[in-house]
Amino acid sequence: MTVRPATHHQKIIDDVLGNIVDGTWPPGHRIPYESDMASDYGVSRMTVNKALTQLTREGYLQRRRKVGTVVAAPRVQSAVMEIADIKSEVSAAGRTHGYVQLHREVRLPLEADRKHLRLPANSQTRILALQGLHMAEGLPYCIEDRIIDLAVVPGAETASFETEPAGSWLLRQVPWSSAQHIIRAVGASAGDARLLKMHAGAACLEIE
Image (cartoon, rainbow, N blue to C red):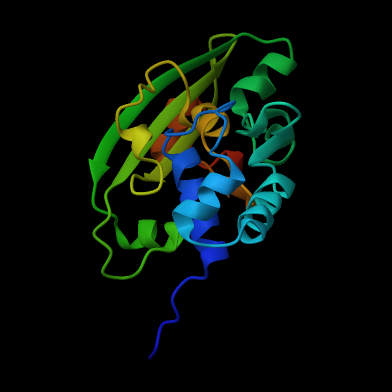
């Protein structure tokens, strides 16, 4: 099979997103001028402009008069409406939120991990597996399980999730463009029931 090389347009997009995701270009950072990027990539300024316009339309960049093009702040408010931020959910209900990290492990992906992260069968990328318990007014509220591809979000490996949930951290740090939810009614497993202080088999809502 012949693999076609990425276009200049796509290369610019991939490079800009890479700098944003790994923190090289934090929110508010002014990216290089279009003329400089055109020279660096050996393309016309129009090619650079089209790539940056696409990223601006998708919310990764902002155009500012007299400043130039800067990295946009993470879209926390819009993200909360579509991706659950459990801490905000508890606080919005007027309850005090608490969080306890239960498990943290850096490892190679299991078969289920590869399926969830859409990794190839032979992938050796490392992942960070986390589990934490959210509290509301000192009582168990829900369990949060996370798997993070460290090749995509390397900063997660050194981030402390002792007090801040991974979900909230990800919403603040990492740009996202799409989300998918799977919602199920399940019976609590024996282990989950102990953590949530309920009977095994009790009805729970699971959001993946």
